[in-house]
Length: 366
Image 1 (cartoon, rainbow, N blue to C red):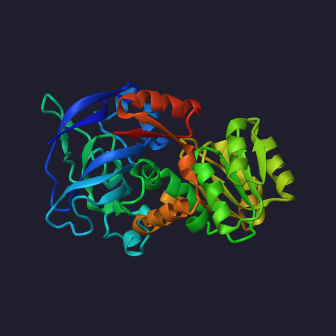
Image 2 (cartoon, helix red, strand yellow; image 1 turned 135 degrees about the horizontal axis):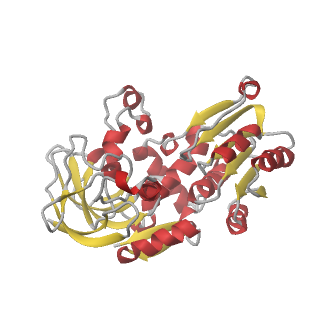
């Protein structure tokens, strides 16, 4: 099989549209023809590492939605013609997977971020016969046709519009799941959300679904805060860049501290400010990924506050993704309004729009 795909050959170079050869699926794999795929910050993380450390070429993409073309001999969860959303991969055997917490799989890196299958093989080769990285988050969905791990596949109702379902596979389910699953924010509780991109705005929407009380959105762009207001934030804070000011602003707006905070920026100073803006028994959920260390004072740590990491919103994708899609159909979770579409050939323009903030959630269409 052959496919068009967006290939990143160097960490700081552009994506290039190339024709790749695609191997046949293994017994536990599915061939998916993509209809749409979201562009997430995680797809752009190679830009943040030294160029000499980049292990490409690689096909990224981990928020795919499409139609099943073929299945391996042992696949029984989907069949050709089924509509599917793609999410992260997991081993199924480790203690986390056994406890139905697959997003904390002990082999998460091997199955999602190694640039290959766990055994080191890839499903793509280029025009020169050289391997190209595949199976990013089990799917590598910046390709018109891809071989996908069965555990990454979620069957969805064929009446739903695939073009808007892709972002449910990672960013949207992470923001919503942080509120609904990880933090389990109860009705009436106060919540601060630092960062009002797709992740943070999904959390704002989810806060309305669970009936949270005061919802405070934080961002450095007024346009994002306007969106947060639109989707239910009761208060907003325009960040000045001073973490001391931010902590004080949160305490002032919440009247002494929030019950919960959800941190999406990965900025160490913002993490600390969100933590200091909690009540003495508040909980901070951290989904943003940064490169700096974060320190907390002993006195604040023994106050009763809790810090919790959040991966994929503690989601079991086969259950949570259809639930979010149903909420969207009901008009209660309008994440699709955040989407700006681009053809695959404009992936570099989509990246630029994501980086600049001109597009909250870019989605590539095939």
